[in-house]
Image (cartoon, rainbow, N blue to C red; front, side, top):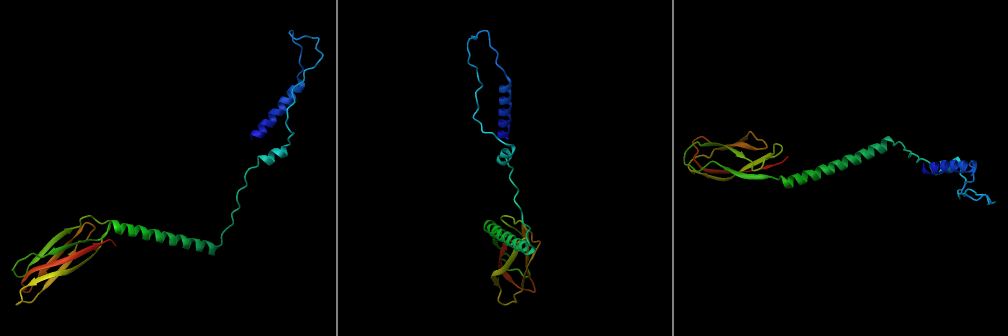
Length: 185
């Protein structure tokens, strides 16, 4: 665009300079026989085609339509990449928000048919309801009676759960301890 402006300016200036005649001024000596000439500009003549060739707009890239197979392959590759990223995020989440464990116990006593219901809060809450596993780790009973122990979990949430331990049928249970572990799903 600058070249077009310069070209037009040069054409106008050269046309104006050729049509202007210099008159003598009163301070100039009329005895001078030398004529004053306009300075010649060292500009090569341009044509409109030369300017168009220099100021040519970039051509848009031609896009070739992809075949259905190519698009399906690209889609599967992107799907695989998303799956890999989800796995990495999940592993980072497990490292940061790993499993939590603890114990629950019935409490030492020589009474028959005991039960205990307790709320066990997690030290740090889970974003979603975790998977919970529990198992008996210690049992102390009277040897002359049958051992009947039942443990259940209820109201499991991301913040904690209710744990119930019950003995029945004349069972004398001195102590029962359960260990539990909650992990994100």
